[in-house]
Length: 149
Image (cartoon, rainbow, N blue to C red; front, side, top):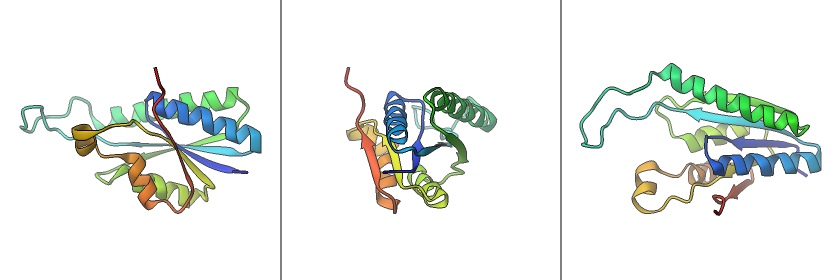
């Protein structure tokens, strides 16, 4: 059974579904979780394609990420599962490899990530964090599709 489960977190229903599954796995096997959120400032590119000033400073993105991790850790505590958190500044790097590196650094047995199910132009523009994790991880990865309505 998995003892060290890394959960890639963002503020989405898919990530919350991933957290629920990771909690279930940890409870069954007596494991613990590492909740990871990678924050990044959005590019200051407007819809019209010209460069503009970002609406929020970097500190606001960091604080929002820490709030997300704190709320997720509280969910784990209520479920009786031990969880640590790690907030990572992307610093212009791709998110997937940063999550994979965190898993290796923590000696994770499993990475759990919710997918967003993006297709077409959205996937091209936004990329796929889940795919980046799959390509770079040396740890098993559990992908959870978006919840159905």
